[in-house]
Image (cartoon, rainbow, N blue to C red; front, side, top):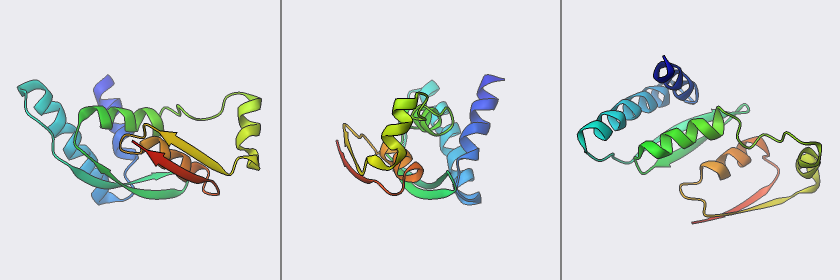
Length: 122
């Protein structure tokens, strides 16, 4: 049941029908490759969050898919403290993401706070 719910959360992130299909297909492919010892393949799809969407390019690892759901569905970066809410309440105008990997966190911040400037480096 846990895998079914995870798959549901993942597919919901797709910004359009084609992206939802791509996310489902690549997750199932990567899960299969994990069991047989194969490798993933690069792919791109559109992600929707906070009423905005972005095209994301993946290198093709299961970890990227897991991180995508963690960040966008499990609300890892949603402020939970008043001082954090104050930080992003308009006073912060730029964000520096060091160790950005494929940029999932940067994309989340860009979709959530479109008024800030983001510099991301890996």
